Amino acid sequence: MNAHEPELTTTSNNHGDDVQATRNLAELLGEPEPIRHPDDVQWFTATLLAHPVKAVQTAPVIAMVAELLDILRDDHTSDQQAHHALRRAVRWLRIFTTEPPGPTNRHHPDTGRRDYVVSAENLAAAAASRQLATTWLRGTPQAAIRTAPVIGVVDQLHADLQYSTSNREAQARLRHAVALLDVFVTDDRTAPQPQ
Image 1 (cartoon, rainbow, N blue to C red):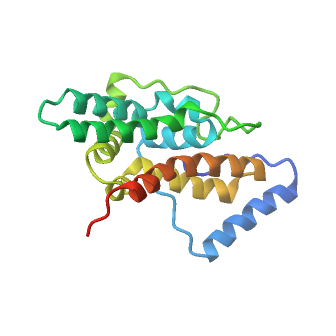
Image 2: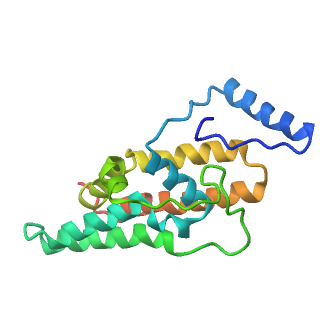
């Protein structure tokens, strides 16, 4: 099964027909094929969209904190650069500390009902997560949006919007994705513009 497609459990023939019609429409519109992302990115995107608080212990979040620690300890990083990195990190990490009000479906098909524990081996192999952290804290928002975890969020959201079984579920996933993506847009708006 493709990691970006939810398991289809139909309770009636009409629901299955609706899902098939959605897939056929996506194919007619020439929608892009889902991208196969590393396991840490898949877990991060699915968990972020379904339940941001659980995403706290995923590789991209841990890598962001590790990269921030490296920057704060680096004697060759200026105070201004360190402060800028800290502001960016806090803005990014704040997403994982709050849940929107109201009930949502907390069990995304890709996460199941299990927790993903990031071992030292998993974290060492999470190159895409470390790339996001480094690019976001040391680089530019424009470069950060092209890293696998950010693309993974958009890719997973695309699938969720097509295949979610309820409007409430789709809206919750959209809310979580926009919260993350807004960090990159907001930083871009507040950054000094080149003259």
